[in-house]
Every structure is written in structure tokens, then in C-alpha cells.
Length: 243
Length: 236
Image 1 (cartoon, chains in turn cyan, brown):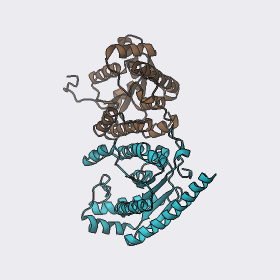
Image 2 (cartoon, rainbow over the protein chains, first blue to last red):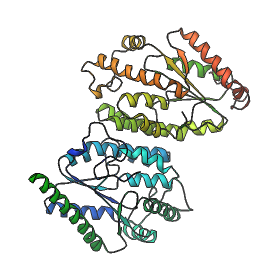
Image 3 (tube, rainbow over the protein chains, first blue to last red):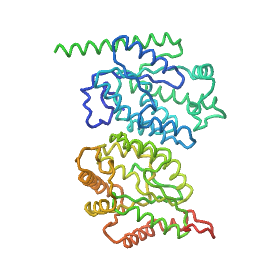
Image 4 (spheres, chains in turn purple, green):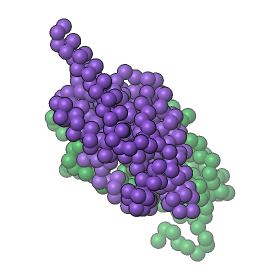
């Protein structure tokens, strides 16, 4: 996919959406399971509001349309890879059109826990064609920034064992059973996810953030990047008002 | 369509397409009975029937939550589930799978809803290419007469009411089904449809379908498709 200016559609414009009306800022936090995205987003949310920004926080499988259906489908043992990819893409479309775009129109900072890149990485980890899923997800808006929290698989293992106490079926890619047990499968599956995300860094302009460090340091770095981004956007908006 | 994957398996895939009221469901049901009566292993798959996805689709329809994109995507999800967990394994195993509507329904309907032709064709590019696709060509007024006469309630999305074509349900239905018809007609060559004149009698349409089946895949049905073991009466 060709690089896009922020808040332009990648390859498939949604009819009826005028991108020039989107005044907000779209910030994506990406990364593998257990890397600490959720806690960073919670802190960023609080900080951005303190700075005076209105924030919408969204994430995968939370749509009014498909969130429940995805949770139910994951309880069974019949969810196939293509079905999963498309179910998550449906969920994304619903949130994009009904939450993200309206919030951007209203000038919010949209903070999203994963984006199309995780859907794409999971599809690629299951052997699906990258070009296929890129085109399917081509109706997504290019974000202002994608912060890719990256660390080694060993660190993810530690976080799962210490933080959660058990390996999750889907986080271990057990639908593909890549090893004798959840630990082995987790290591191989998350390595594939990291590899897939690594391959997107350049083409989608990810900012790679070293997530092996303590959470405070990661938070400080994220704040620094976002402060620069927001500063530039505020000055640009002020410039527009003066014109 | 070059982007659907060719069927290299023992089994066969037969699909029917056409607008609502074209009579395709009646015909595929008659055809599958006939194939069963000849001792073949036959399975049936209907559009929009995945047990994993159906509830989400129903919820979206009931609450009128769909946009053209999410409507298209949830139907593709439903299709993917049926293909991955039902159609493909059965065709690989050597069954004849009869499908009432297939990817072409999305190519016609989603485009009539404003989704781009290119995007929806890519969306379904993982689909198995049918061995035979029958398209039931019917004039709009005949189809409308069958639908409007037979049922008292046209559904919201079937009428394309989400598109704001008309405030009148029947009028919106007419415009929307007309657009779908145009899309079907435009893809007929590209998709390799066997066109059946749906204004003919039911018996004559069925006779033509069976003739096409014999001519095009008759040999494969006799030699490579799974047959029921002797003594099992599948028609019961």
C-alpha cells in the first residue's frame, strides 16, 4: 500500500466522507499481545485530557455491531482464519464509521488500541495473502501516528507468566497449534506476529518504541512524541484560523 | 472471474444466482434432489446461514446498524465461515455442493449499495470458483410481482431502504432490485453464467439445468464424485 497523508483513505474511499472535514487526531498504539498497550493507553488518555484534549478511546472487538459476535465465535472451536480476519474487519468498519470518523469530525483525539495492522498481522501469521488483506482493509484512514510497542518474545512470555499466570488460547495461536502446548505455540505465534508487524514499519510509517523498558520510560517517550505531534497540529490549526 | 480459485478437487460446486423472486431457490432444490436420487453425495449451502455469524447479521439488521461497508463485510464473514468449515472440506472430500447464492450476490448487491466493484471482488478472491453457475434472468416486473404478491412484508435491507432511494418501501425495493439486476447482467459474461430464462415454466427451467449439468460435469459426476453406499436411501 502506498503511504498516505494522515486522515486520507488508504485505497478505498468511503462514500460520503469528506476527509477535509476531519479535524481531529488519530493515534494508533500497536504491538503484540501482552506488550503493555492497554496500560499505556489508559495513562495517555488521562494525560491528554489533562492537556485539554477531548479523547475517544477505542479498540478491537468493541463495536456495537460485531463485538459480542466475535467474543461468542472465539468461545467455540470452529472459527477459521479467514472468518476471523473478516469478522474483525467488520468490527473495525463499524467502529471506524460510527465512532472514529464522527469523533474526528468533532475534533477529538482518537486513541486506538490496535488498528488494521493487528488484523493484517494475524492474517499474515495464518498464511493469508498480504495484498488481499491490505486491499480489504483499504477503507481505513491513515493515522497521524502509529506507535509500535516492540519487544522480544521472551519479554512477552515473562509478562504473560508473571502478569496473567496463564497462556490464552488465541494469544497462543492455538487454532493453528504451532507447538505441543500453549507455551510453545505462543512463542512461535507471537514471533510470526512480530515479524509481520516489523514488515509494516516502513510502508506504514510506524514509530518503533522499545517496550522492553520500564512502563514509566515508555510513557515518557510516548508523551514526548505525542506532544510534538499535537504541538504541530495546534499551530497549524491556529494558522488556519488567522488566514 | 480470474480471481476466484479454480476447483481442483474431486467434488463439484453448483451455484444459483438471480434477484429475489427469480425462482432460483426452487430450481436448486429440485436439482439437488435429482442429484441425490442418482446416488450422489450432495450438500446444500444457503447465503447468510453461518451459525457463527448469523446472530450478528440479525442484530445489525434488526437495529438497522449497517453501512454499505459493514453490510458487505458481515456477509463476506458469513461466506468465509461457510466456505472454510463446510463447502471447501465437502468439495475436497468429493461431494456435490449446491449453493443458493454465492459471491456474485455480493458483487451485485454490494455494488448496488455503492461499494466499489474492485473492492468487493478482491474481498471474495479466496472463494472457490463454481463448476457451474446458473443465473435466473427475469424481468424486474415479473420478479416484483412474485415478491409483492407472495409476501406481505418486504424487509428493510432487501428494499435498500438504508440508501434513501425512496421513502416508499415498494418504490425503494423496485429501484434497488433494478440496480442489482443491472449488476448481474453486466457481470454475466465475466462470471460465465449459464443463463436460464426464469419466465419459462418451472419444469422447462429444470430440464435445461439438468441438460447443462449432464453436458458440463456429467462425466465427473459418474466417475469422481462421492456416491452413497448401496442400500442407503438418501431421498427419504
